[in-house]
Image 1 (cartoon, helix red, strand yellow):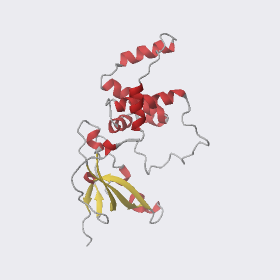
Image 2 (spheres, rainbow, N blue to C red):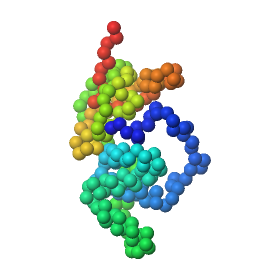
Image 3 (cartoon, rainbow, N blue to C red):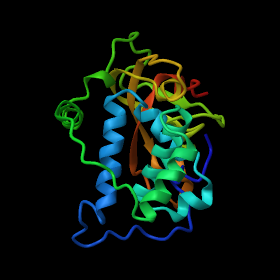
Image 4 (cartoon, rainbow, N blue to C red):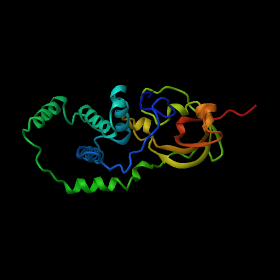
Length: 227
C-alpha cells in the first residue's frame, strides 16, 4: 500500500542521527512490548506480515510522532482487538485500573512459551518453503511492476516500474502480500535484484552506485529487448 511508512527516497525528514551508546531499551515497557510481540507470534495469533501491515495502517500523523516501540504497541493492540483476543472495552478498563493503582497484574511464568520465544530469535526455517522453479537467472534484465497496491507489499514505492538485473536467486519464500491477508504462504522465488541508484532516484543519486533489493518473482517481468 502507499503510505507514510514507505519513506525510502523521500526528502524533508533530515539526516538519520544515531544515538551515542544507545541502550537496547529506553524504558522497561519497551522490553515488555517486544516480549508480547514474540509471544503472539509463536502462538500463531499473528504473523510478521500481518504485523507489518498493521503498522502501515496507523494514521500518518501518529506514525510520524511515534517511536519504534510505540508503533509496535499500536500494532499489537490493533491486531489483538481485530482478532478478538481482547476487546477495546477490556483494554480501556484495564488501563483505568492500572492508572488508579488498582489490581496490579499477577506474576505469570510459562517456561515452555519462553523457550519457544527464544528459539524464534535464531531459528526461522518456516520462512523458506518449497516452491516452483525460478523463472529468472542471474544476469537477466527485469522491470518491476508499477501499481498502487491496497494491501501489504514488500515492493517499495521508489522501486516500482524500474529496470534492474537479477543478481542471485535465494530460493522460494513465503509471499508477504498474501501472508498478510489470510491468503496463505504462496511461496515462490525470491531474488536479489541490482539497480543503478540513478534508475531509482534520478540524476541526483550517486553515479552508478548499485542498490540491491530482495524482490519476489510476482513483482517482476522480463525487460523488453532493447531496440
